[in-house]
Amino acid sequence: MEKTFADRIKLALREPKRVAIYMLCCIAPLLPDRLYLKWLFRLRMGYRLNLDNPQTFSEKLQWLKLYNRKPEYTQMVDKYEAKRYVAGIIGEEYIIPTLGVWNTVDDIDFDALPNQFVLKTTHGGGNMGVVICRDKSTFDIPKAKAKLRSSLNKCIYRQFREWPYKSVKRRIIAETLIGDGQIDDYKFFCFEGEVKLCQVISGRESIMSIDFFDKEWRHQPFHEPKEYPFSAHEITKPKLYDKMWDIADRLCKEHHFIRVDLYEISGRIYFGELTFFPTSGMGGFDPKEWDYRFGEWIKLPIRL
Image (cartoon, rainbow, N blue to C red):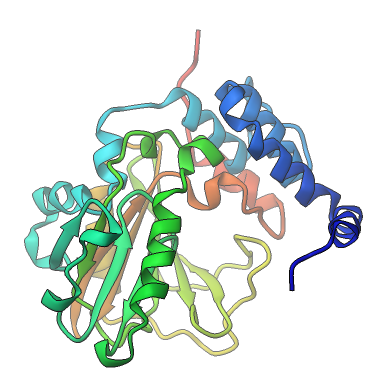
């Protein structure tokens, strides 16, 4: 049922912060990056963004958005081009096969795709623009096209000022579906060329949980993003954990911060993506002291 004007007023009164963020995003193209990030950060995080002397992980990621802009970052976050970049460092055997690449949704040749596959847009982070097909006979093509078309119209740079995405060519790729499609993500948080922690995301299609582990697979006592719980069941250390850690170490050199996403499936390791700004640096920590601890691991250069 379409919301009435009165319904919208009630929503605005109940969630004023949400409305303020929406209004800020509406005028985002008119604002310089630094000012826009200061306002957005204050609304989402609840405290002022200190760009002159950033201390927390969240603050330092905003600083990196503004002052650490290297041309190669565009290739590294492009879900199609990143495969070539990563293969050049660790080898083709870790790359999920690409079945096709198209510039528009209407160009996708569904008849040429196998019974199972994954479609994703090349310019988005997380699950934005990801569609999984487990059985073509029941696959809802119009619904998939609508989701992909909506994703192609979104811009992470405009919304969160994540500079690497600004020049990524917006395309759709198809990939082989690995595993059963319900797999755990192993996301390695790397600081100043060194892997520090591994984030494990479980239950994406049910009750999503997020846990962190160190190199010895010791569970860490914090939440990031802060709203997600720990897993309700014990998470078993993957058999190839040490090898995944080494691969992440090879991919993280010469970066103040980068997250390397990998999968372990049926005795093999696969590359997922590279991310410079998880949750755009605005996910929050619980307890908050970990935001400062993460921040200590990033050594920013002095700006004159």
